[in-house]
Image (cartoon, rainbow, N blue to C red; front, side):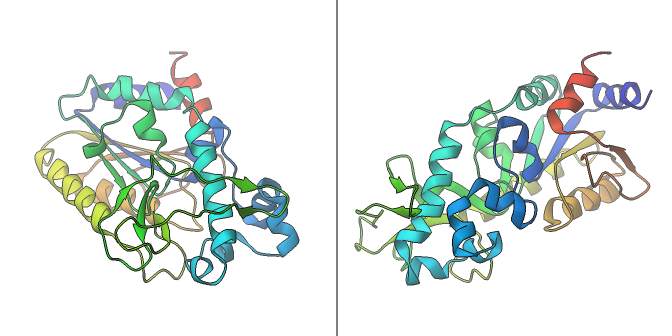
Length: 270
């Protein structure tokens, strides 16, 4: 009965806001970094080094060990390029295309899966940046696309092969335009522009009936959860929180303990 209620809420909405955390990509085959066990299962070479995800996702490696830094991020870049978004991405897009107020995505994921599924660039906030964009380590130039970057990784040592990506303007090392842990060097200009687009969309839909669909946003890094709860309160919107482990929330929350793909499979039964 809860799924039927949620389908009616989605159908009746004028606009859809999507919040997406790391769990959104798991059904596409992307690794789950929840806890060291999950991280090391995906990266056994890093387990041998004894580093956790938060220790590896740190800008210091681009200064101290650039081949290890690009081994980690180069592998992820190649993985995300090769991964096809699961059907849930396309299902959301079909619902959103029928809405007068359209759709906006707020995601902590850096994998570019929403763009690959057909969502337009100006309807997405990537609050932690994107692996598909790079910045100069010296900060001498603008953020650029990583489309031409080709990183080969030795999976035995987990080190990237030379030559490493370099800035065309000054010759310094490039790094992903991703907000890492303890990162004071991240260039947030691209995300700032996305946030301004988001504020404009919210303003245009201030009188709309918005439904918030949140997928796979955990409590460890709760950026997406907090944003969805804030917008739900400000706009008196229904919050549908789809999460197999952390589906709880404030009174406006309809929590569904499912993965994203399983949620849409259930939704399509009615």
